[in-house]
Length: 110
Image (tube, rainbow, N blue to C red; front, side, top):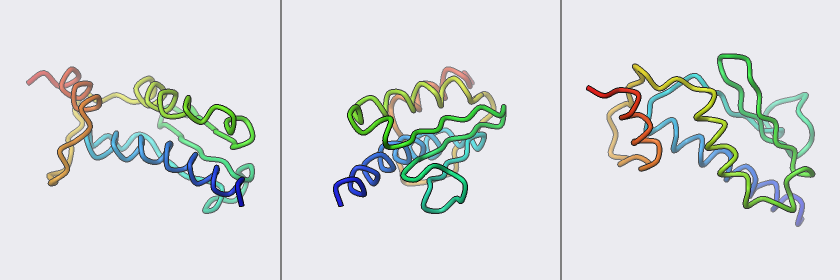
């Protein structure tokens, strides 16, 4: 039960940052999945994949002792493997994540 709870924490950290990134920037160059919905991934793992072919695979066993490092890693990886120039967020009531909004503004200085 503890391992599954840790997996859910891992998923919430990875997916949460991915969702904040996507909703704030509208960038659709990254895909997210995890091992419960995608066959072929290691058990209890999350994966981000970019259009440039880069993959960030996060198996729980590698990260369980340092889950606090996951969100900063994912944020950095998303920034390195996406191009926000020309991206347009969809209209929404979501105010956006301040970090990603600033990165989006820097890429689109209209």
